[in-house]
Amino acid sequence: MQLTAQGGNMVVDFYPVKMYDGSIHNRLMLKIVTFMGGTQSKSYINKVNMQREIDSRVHGYNYDVTGFNTDAQLYNSAMGMAC
Image (cartoon, rainbow, N blue to C red; front, side, top):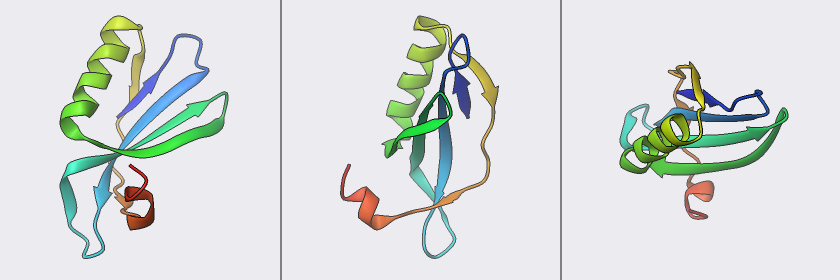
């Protein structure tokens, strides 16, 4: 899913996560925050927290749903340790 703030400066993308064996992780999503075209952060988020964040941004901060990301991104275990 892709969320875009009013004015379009902030974009938050959520992608499914693909494991090394090709399976899609059933609890994790990759979250990428972009501000004015530059990536600010990448992190893994569980689906429960993702839904809370989507609700907060859409209903509390008037973000628009601007896309649906279906291309699974390969899990990076080094990045997972930073979470």
